Length: 197
Ligand code: GAR
Image (cartoon, rainbow, N blue to C red):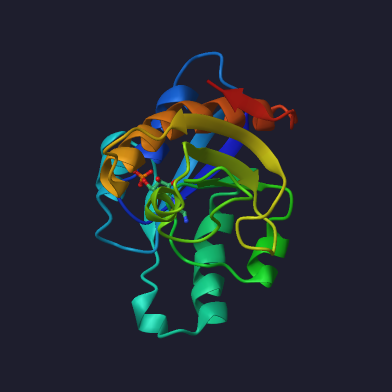
């Protein structure tokens, strides 16, 4: 069974869905670490309550020294010997050298239909542009931010009266279906993109 480390920064709802799916008997992978750059991230306590090993590397004391921060991250990650890394609401930009260390083994979920709306504030930007459709993407992490090969996408309608918050909630619900579906495939070497719904 493939060993999976999940990197989070916040609530960890995607992390929980991945863990929940890996708990089903037929799953080809299992969680070996949940790691956060924020020691107070609520997702850490949720993972610990489920008996998953957790760790935190607070980015703040590194004061912008990304290589030193990433060396500390790598030490924690590599100690868990993961085969696959899942970024799930991990909100730090990673350097090309960190990404190269995990080449072909790192996934990210992003709240837009990539290649549209890379970066932050995706829901507000999609609304401001008058999009009628929005969604989320799971992609392989490469040195170009939010631009690696797409492994899955899920679409949602934009509805009249949507705010960034209502749209985000609709997208998040789809993220919870999409990410586990992609991980199941990826864990057995299948990179055929998942399309939802
Ligand atoms: C999710 O919507 C995820 O797509 C987004 O953060 C949220 C985390 O929620 N990720 C990014 O914006 C990455 N740049 P969660 O902690 O409940 O999974």
